[in-house]
Length: 429
Image 1 (spheres, helix red, strand yellow):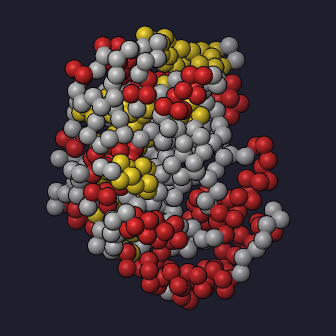
Image 2 (image 1 turned 180 degrees about the vertical axis):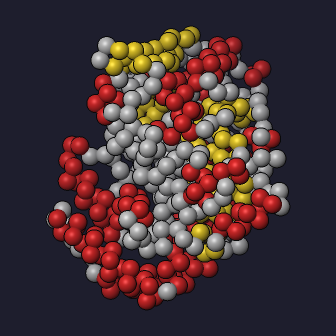
Image 3 (image 1 turned 135 degrees about the horizontal axis):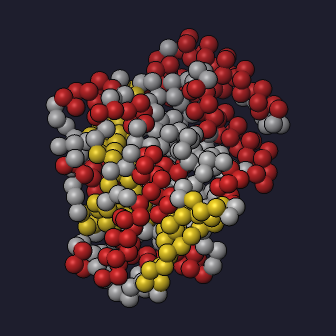
């Protein structure tokens, strides 16, 4: 049986939480390999709803969760999340959660810098969550990160804070924001050390052992391909690589161990924050999609922008993300619409193209080219087989398959875990 990597095929918020939860029941280990607590997964289990940002979704199903080195970890956010799920009856301990010892930490100065920069951008703000994700990744690349393993070495921690503050306080001062003191940060980190270090280990060893013992590993991505720092709608992207290839570097495994790559896409398109969105709807239909789909960011609570399904964009995500099969979610949100549209390409300055260009102004100028399909009058909600779907809904799904050049292997018809139609088992490879 193969491992599985799950990534978003649009701009995030595609319903990965439900899909990962569904797959986690058949996995042994679930690994987060990038992003931070700017990601959000909502899992509905019976009468309980779990909203996770850092914890791998598998812990809800009693599986071992792993936070890989490709994540940037906010210690306070993690501990708060553990307390929150504990209040819901879910116990998280070093027995069911392991964290890469070399994971970079998000410190209080990171969100402070994040927010100060967004304020300075004014109307040109990127739309970050303000949680310090970008500045933390900058420190990682700049070789000045405080990592989890540093908490076990107070002298190392003290010396590294000197370098970190030299950099960050200069930036904060220039932006007119308050500076940070070394004592405050050092005391805070030393107080956190005994709470965090029991979770730390070289997770690459555990994953190597799991591979050789035949255990199933599920790699859980955050955000989505079109928010990838290289391949997304730059600069309106996240600060990490969200494509499946990063599961290897972000977890400490070989690329041949990633397994089957499963992409998640909604039956329409949404986006949170700023940036180009060619198929966005500013009319009553867009408002209706948002209301029916309960389109609010899991992390930020911000309303999501809504639009028609963009097959051109998803096809691009399939190619650069290495996606071998798709999950189509929220098909039921389209129930009852008289007609549906699918974006099949763009007109940019009079030219017809089949991809989103890399250049910013060209992205902003992209106008959608639509194909119109007939809607359906029946309900798809809760369907668990193709036989239960209206004929026009089946045609819509098949047309998406053709346009994105990837098979739809799972179809989600409600937030409930078992309301899923499976055409192919991802763990079968």
